Amino acid sequence: MEEKANLLSLPGSDGLGIQFKTTQDPTMASLFDAYDQEFTSISQDINKNINELKRTSGGASGGTIRHIENLLSQAQDLIKQMEVEVRSLDPATKKVLNEKLQQYKKSTSSLKSDFERAKEQAQRSNLIGDKSVEQRQRLLDTNDKLSRQNEMIANAHRTVAETEDVAAEITTELARNREKILSSRAKVRFRQS
Figure (cartoon, helix red, strand yellow):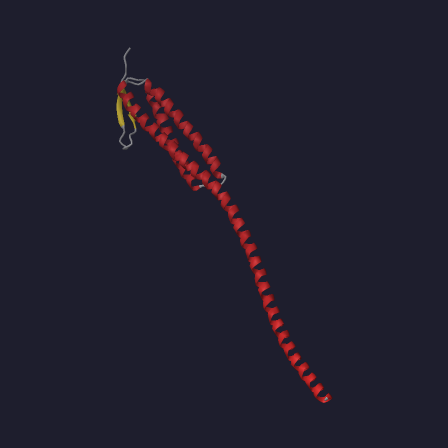
């Protein structure tokens, strides 16, 4: 049985890629490539959704959180599937692909950390946002109540000032009346004498 040498091409992060000669079944390599492309697509989708989660507040973040969790699970499953495929390849190819898988694991771990931070921030924002609306409403209610009380105090001050003016006028009027009464009494005594 004659073994055929196949060419395995892997895209590199530098855009150039790597080519290996392998005696393995070409479907194994193409299967790994398919997993690789799917992983890259899922990673980009996770990044996009994490950025969306960072910008989103309110009820929409719950769906985004579940979607990212599903994508992370799919990414981890793809890594496991790629590990299975790599086991059946020749040692030289296996070494390079294992290094690539290690990078993917680090990338997935980093994405998971970013997701956890964004998730915590979104949840905190939702809690603070809800409380903020309640606090704002309470503040507005309190301001209205203070305005009404200030108006009542101003009215009371006006009433007191008016009462003082009336009292001063009455006092002045009484003083004049007293003068008149004393003057009239003096005249009556003078005439009776």
